[in-house]
Figure 1 (cartoon, rainbow, N blue to C red):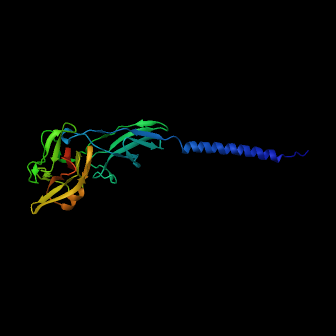
Figure 2: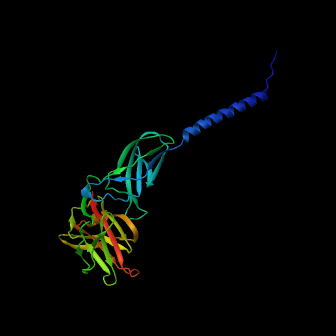
Length: 290
């Protein structure tokens, strides 16, 4: 006896199971390829300096992150790093600054050691980490002025004895203070003694500075050698800030190009007639290099 085949039934059955098969495969692949990310939360950082290295106050605006040596990105603090890789990983973080205070020049600050830690990341979980940063052992501090009792900036270049840096209550305890007016409108002052021993091979040289001011002021270098007279060159004009700010000034190129033996830090400012007095506060000046 010959049996007839209902092809419509077979076709419908095949189509039904094929759709089920495709859905199962799609769902499985979708879950595998697009799980919930793991998150690394970094609310802040801790700075640990030795007493002879001055203040712990830094202004690291960025973190450069590497996950198992692969660059994960640069993140503003507080940071939340999303990862699609799970399991055990090494996280390496480096502090970032705005070179010379310019928003368009974020860089890794080379004077600090990177922070590294091992983490276990799981899909959908938040892992918190607070990196600890320290200056590199090879960092050399040529000048530190915290203005607690006096200042190292006593070399009066402008020849007005009534424009100088005084000591007033400040950021942590005391700070340096400059006041200019119509009768005494200009200050130009440097640290007293020339510093030597700076690298001329392109190794990083920086000045760290806390400040607040209602006028613009300039910072630069005076350099000389035994057979070269003193040359003054201003690097940067620092703009007014109502609240305390920190700037990292990169003098690497200037020292590499000049190849001189001695240097002084020099500051210059002029009174702004828009104010009855022009006021500059300074704190925690550090001049250091690798």
